[in-house]
Image (tube, rainbow, N blue to C red; front, side, top):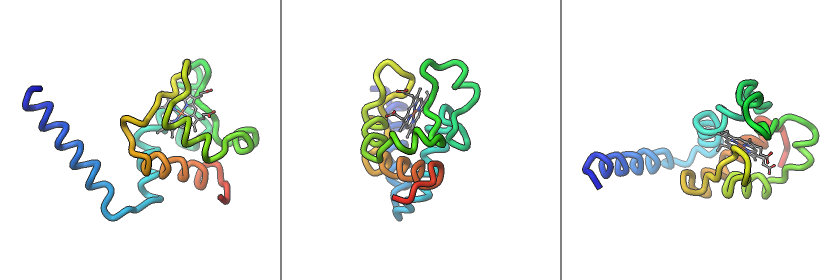
Length: 117
Ligand code: HEC
């Protein structure tokens, strides 16, 4: 492995580690959403009009009543971890830690879907 790749990995590991201390859970979920999910799921979680027009199926609109009923916390964590085969929703398990996936799912549920749990 060339040195620059190793240095890059070390740096990204350091950045990831530093974002854990102290654990600002709500802020972490928001940051991950904005960095990783907003591009497809949209600023307000009702999906980005551009990605919605080019992806089939389109990114999930989290703000509908149907989504609020259908998407349990467990299902959202599973879908974010494993992805949705055959769709643009990729698995995040190699990119985000379990804690980060939970943080972003909780952010979506609390701040975007406005659920109480
Ligand atoms: C490249 C575009 C894209 C990005 C980036 C993306 N998603 Fe998705 N997402 C999709 C698509 C497309 C679907 C619809 C999949 C389907 O209909 O089964 C989806 C569906 C979902 C669902 C619902 C899955 C279900 O069980 O029905 C959840 C939860 C979700 N995304 C969470 C996230 C999270 C969290 C992130 C950021 C870490 C993220 N997504 C980033 C495209 C994306």
